[in-house]
Image (cartoon, rainbow, N blue to C red; front, side, top):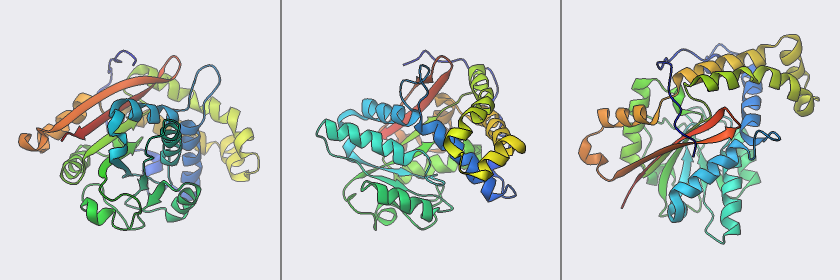
Length: 295
């Protein structure tokens, strides 16, 4: 694990363009395409593995023999995000070790069922809940997963991949309260922090978009137009990236939110762990928090 990076900016919850209702859906999808590429690809020399593969390694290392005890429920799946790729890497590792494979479930307050159906068809270990699921008021595990196959008697591990920073403090506190009430653990993964190196890395996303667009989106006139002629997509990718850095909480801040809003007796059996691991040499770090309820 990398040494802890100093936080040099106070947390600010400014708005991200891609979150706004007025931002056209067609442009939102194109920004999400770039975000997904950032999760699933690795670049020679500076990225030994993709960030999605890195998440699967962290889950495997931290949870160890308990990894198959859980079903991993993504509570802010959007159009699918990195979860299907995390599932692929993790279960590939489990199959190689002859261990029980694990299930992932996609949920969101605004379900993207068309995209989720594709992910579910591509893997027997990916399912989804078609109903709207509010992470601040999620139902019990029995109700939430009643139509999801292969998860009977499994504990719920909530998954927030590049998502938790989207909640302001009030919403984040409610999400954590509901998580303690209805789940057995949660994972928060962020590819950025409030350290100045994250802002440097985000600044490189614009030239990166210029470089990779012909390779990935040559047959998409919309991607080409809104990347080169009217560069709205790379602008939003970089601007929202800066805001994501400012919004990201440290492990201490997340733990403080939990302790501020959840009675101490309810937290007695909960174990908090966190760390960093480099995803892009030498300045990009995956910041992770894994909290689990111990027997």
